[in-house]
Image (tube, rainbow, N blue to C red; front, side):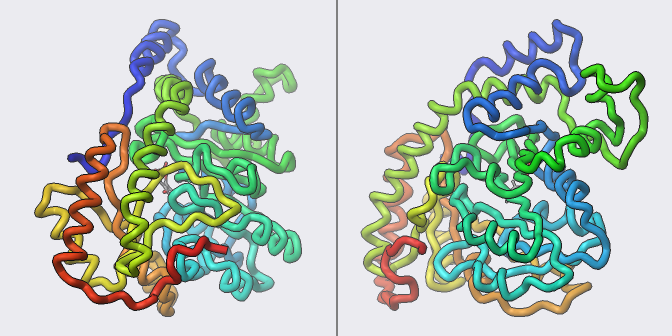
Length: 391
Ligand SMILES: *Cc1c(COP(=O)(O)O)cnc(C)c1O
């Protein structure tokens, strides 16, 4: 069993061949437009720009929000480095918040307590494609005059109260990295939900030039009008992505059935108090991106990982909390964030990809059951309230 695999739809090569034969291989061509239109038509995103990665989309967001030295940006500590790096590159100070007690997403009480007169941006991360409570985040942002940049890297086809993730903050960033549900190898998108950013986003995207306005006939010549970089992917990347987007429904269907099978098989062990599985708040519709279990302690987690490995089942921990990474500690002495710490040391991701069958999922669950039963782990302390939904 593999930990992950990408689902090839069969159309990727055809579309890439079309690009090669057309001779138009650089960015912002027909396939780029087709992908961007897909997001507008299917989800109603106001404006979408394809990027070479989610990291790049977040770098664009950092430039667009004019984050500068002296500004503070609040985000969860339990996230990928790319949530933080784009704002650090602009000279901002990153302020890390803890996760919720029973969910890796940012704790909103803590978020609120960290807002100062220097805060400029909030970056909620929708971990495993499960929505943060965006109504609360948006009203905090409006109250304090802050920008919200959604890190929706894992959140394609996932929703908050019926609204697609990435469309709610002022800006949203998505990833099409190989490890995500829909992939282009490397790729991403920036969603611009506040029209205030429209014109400048295009300029930053096109290396700081007004080339897009020129091609629309709005200016006579194009030149250097702002800072920017080479954020747009080639048409080969866009062609690959388009093939994936066109088959999203079937890709998601398989993932969904595997995820649900994990849920049904592992819920009884969760209810018996052996560990905690994914919590899905009532306001969230997730996209089956990750199935995980959280053990009571680091020791059990390590034992479980080696047990699974011994049985040929690949499983992985996830993020190492950023606020205690050596790179960050150098600048800001760490504080203790107990929930981020627990998810760092006790969260195990189980294999979940389109190359798997329901039988594979059963095998993983059987091995987990065996581990907890044979160890006679009577660690049934009510560390997590039994599978109550996150509120
Ligand atoms: C994958 C991921 C990223 C980075 O995406 P890339 O497209 O690889 O740059 C950023 N944030 C989160 C939460 C991610 O999961």
